Length: 143
Image (cartoon, rainbow, N blue to C red; front, side, top):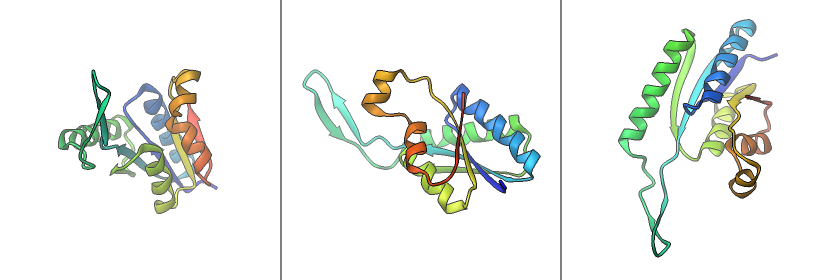
């Protein structure tokens, strides 16, 4: 039985569809719904033309945190789910999603698929692919 759903959102259309799906599922099963935005701070920047790398702060820009909170507020208002638990967390997206699902005891992770091509997926992987591989919990990927 599903009693707690964690839905990861990033502002993409796939994530919005995933949030709506998770809301509907939470209503049908009377489950709690945690909505998570993972804000990944930049940690390295390539500086052309020399391909030098500059290490930046591991603390996210306050504007990124404010944008994440605004996205969360907008989506919760759009969903109309008064019981949704909003959460903005700092860290690499896939690892943060898996860790937060464990921490809150979610029975299911719901997230959007990204339209990443096969070559890009091979080179960098996608967040949903990583969560599918790393999570011990069921993961529902919505297109």
